[in-house]
Length: 246
DNA sequence: CCAATGCATTGTTACCTTGG
DNA sequence: CCAAGGTAACAATGCATTGG
Image 1 (tube, helix red, strand yellow):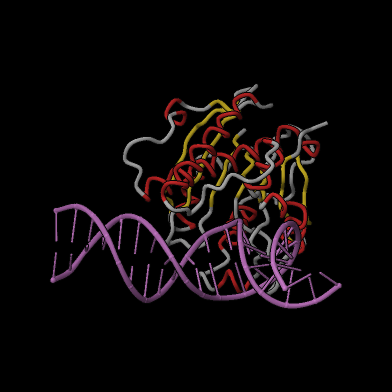
Image 2 (cartoon, rainbow, N blue to C red; image 1 turned 135 degrees about the vertical axis):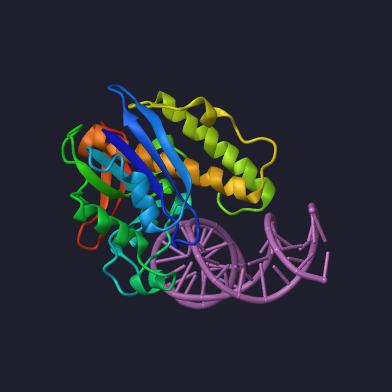
């Protein structure tokens, strides 16, 4: 079983990151990653070795956007529930997304469903499914880590950015002790030091986000419906948020 | 109580600084 | 001097908080 996370850029001109986790019987292990994917074709090529196998893919991008303008119900619900943690999302609609050159999430999801994937979140724990899910890291972090407020680590000025990323990194390392555990490779454990250019900070951020998306997808697969909450539906758009199984 | 502000999201654009 | 890299401001929408 594979669990894959994709931190999808809105435009193919900006880099997309992806992380592949392998199920090793009692934990997830890092199999592969990329942080500079461009076009949809490039992303699908990176996924090619895995997407014929049982596989759950978590994508940080709107996959189902039926509304031409305004916002999706699930985005409003997310904002209502997680707004006080500052984890409200950015409301999306087709017109707005199109202005950036296309509905990428939808296109990617369609390519995958054409290849046999479903958008339906896992109904049974640890069943060998092939599913692609919309995930949203910030609310997921609030729930999984019990935060009172999101960790800000995106697009800040340099100092706060580095601090935020280090904190986010340290937080994610704790997944090692979660159920199921995520085993980090040694190269992922070292905290950013030395020549942290804007480019390398962005790459680090994208990598961490993709890894978290992969874990969220793998978490939903492992626990089944007890381990996630589906906000919204397949018709109007939904977001999958993990929850602690009771 | 209502209006204004702030914050969440990403990409583009204009402008500034730095390096070679 | 030009290229490249960095930064600030803007765009659209909704919720939470704050001020009057």
